[in-house]
Length: 536
Image (cartoon, rainbow, N blue to C red; front, side):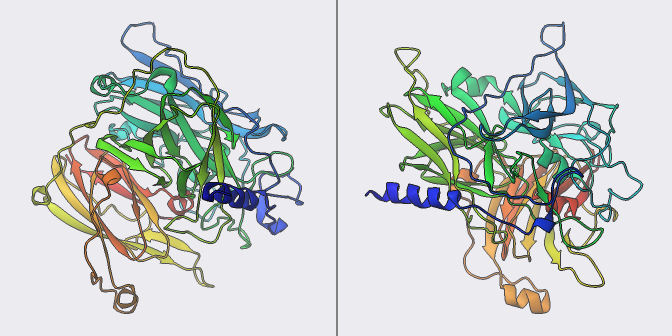
């Protein structure tokens, strides 16, 4: 038996095991029975991959793009053997439709909130921004990775309620990239995301289109999410055992959804395919590889193309991150290739079960054309490295976790402050800053900064014992330089525990009020978010 076959059987066995949890820790809505079985056995690779539809512009004027998008509740099949699930989505699909834009061509979107008046998941009214006086159902849409004005960023407190509309304008004055849109409402982002409020936004760039990468039907977005599903097919979200404070530290599901389907299959031709991966999970970090073992080529990250291709046998993608990659199916006619999540990731967040089978590629379709003219050029994009000497200021930030006690609830904080505290991050527009993010917690945190892209300078371990006893941050060992796949523009960066993660940020976009936060959504809702004031 080959090593690849042994790996596959081990993964299959792990996924086939039924996961049982304390029945009292789960809630969706009042009509969900308490006898909830999660991790119910589901056959993998029985549903075809759902190819997300592309949104059509409503504008009658050539060259302008105006869209109307409706957020609503509906039922959608997540697996062949389950009843349809109640989800929230955009224009009748979850994840939402692909919004396609072009560099330097503005897009205007009216986001119509037609969600129900009552939330399907239990709202924690002890969290800031979600108090008893706030409507349970609220939404504000944020274009993650978009360089936009503050009024169009989807500030967490600028929400709409059912019956209202949020209008946003995205100028798209940035390189081509895989962006995404999602809800960002204060105190309930994790719940709205769990119900399905996320979608892909593809920004095309003439320079990128000219280098011969796979395009059209061979350029396929893949939205990765993890969920817990009960025997009736409904989404189930855990709650704590603390009365009147149902929020949990992190969420880890027992099934992986790709484009809203559990472990689907995708029939492909024996040629190059481009896949735009988005990790839209609440907290799950994916560590992905192909079985039988095969390499894939990463060509881009959050902010667009990398300087040059990076060949991987596996890749890591944290919540909020995007990975742009190419898989070569040439010469693999008749093969079935599985995308696998190995887990636990190198930066674990708890001992949650790790679902392994992501999706299957079936090389079963004949070539539509005699020749595949797409290619992977050796040079992808010119990305000048920012110099530390250009920084006007260096800021030190500490990621802090305060464990629950009889006197206070569990909190995760940035610099020991809550969201409602006055803004302390106030860079001057037109300047460059270095941020040194010191992670004193035991979790990895994917830190996202709104309105900008930045570059990773590197990481450095520090003496955690000394830090715990004296609060001093004393570096140990040698600096850890960025990996090749981290040399592009980023908007979300993994900050491992016990390390200082250094990034350099050009604040050269739009002045105004934004936020920066951890993209583990349970952390974001639980105070790990701070205002960011870019001064004019």
